[in-house]
Image (tube, rainbow, N blue to C red; front, side):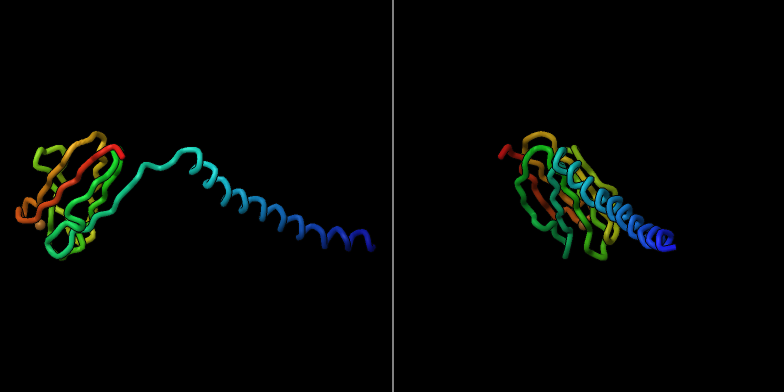
Length: 124
Ligand SMILES: [Cu+2]
């Protein structure tokens, strides 16, 4: 019965190899896809202490900016040329905008118009 014994010991080992292959593929595959299609650049900005931080930024066309309100007070992100405008953002709410073309985009918080910021979009 030594034959049966060796089978039973090998089966769990094979199961481990199969699992390792499945999990290994799970880690490797996303890396391959990420390399094939580079993600669009993203920038995170904060709204904190009644100010946009940083207040002024230069980015490349196609960059997505995400503003997060870190204050206890509602704010908005509203461009002066109306090309983008958030709703009222409560604490930890986010607003995203992707800047496709070059230009200078100044914006304010409509609740507190003394809060100003500007995004310069330039080919780099
Ligand atoms: Cu505000």
